Image (tube, rainbow, N blue to C red):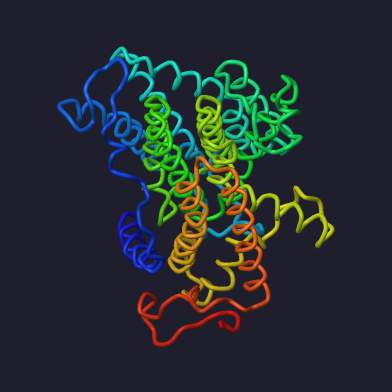
Length: 427
């Protein structure tokens, strides 16, 4: 099992090099002061402060590994044994309760901060409390397969409402004429906040289709929030964004590339809620941050969801909630990866699965770059969102019409054969 993980890492690493994605997070983010503990990450307190990232990472990784190795005991409940659905791309039953490790990792971070007397512990604890309805509803669905999409949506909305009142995580400005008047009222702010948080949580679940896809995107998004939180001097939000990164990566190392465990609905809803709340708290606390900055950061999963609803409702005339196999990530898998690794055995299927995500990580980065450049300019963010939408739709229709761009065709060197192959006619 672990030899497969090592081989898959080497293969996926080669693909990711093709994307030439560089890190956007400034190293100065490490020179932060932790309230209640003293010192800076760049000074004598470096080891203590790094625990905000390391504790959730190692705890999440350890708990996730335990879940994997104990799957023989709970697999009859936790394993995803449906291998034939339109959104199923694995070859054998896999546990889908990866959210447990992330939740426990963040809880351990809260306990660590509380034991050290840090004032940041309160925010982390309340984030977990508020996110509990979304996490619980998703986890119950993962175990029983009996929680309807409507009930899960209500659970994510309940989490958003709790954060609205308990954390004061409110959307009270948008910089959009007319809409600002609506969110300026208590009821309007509540409606906008609940809609936004539930929307992001569900959109993260939508893109959770391949090994490492949603979790790496969420990692990059949380790092973006951490960067801007640092820029505006909000150490508390920076630290909890980094804690979220640690917890997500603790799961990621077992999910990508070999797919030893899946995130599941519980994990997707929870990290989606966590991501949305960090973004909303950032704009609620700091007026210099554009209210559209969190949307620009999360625009890939949000646009994927909106486009899917439009495609199903108006083009295919099917219910918006009905799953299908023609999301952008599904098309990349079926029309590029199917030919790059064409064998039908389980190992080839795992390779195709892991080779899909880096393409979407790159797409995600195309929204994060302008978001980090123009985090304080609503006008520029609107322009960049429109451009992202055009890029997404153009890319989608080129793939669906078998006109895949040449740069997306997988290189022959990485798959060990001469020439290149594509399901369409690259140009």
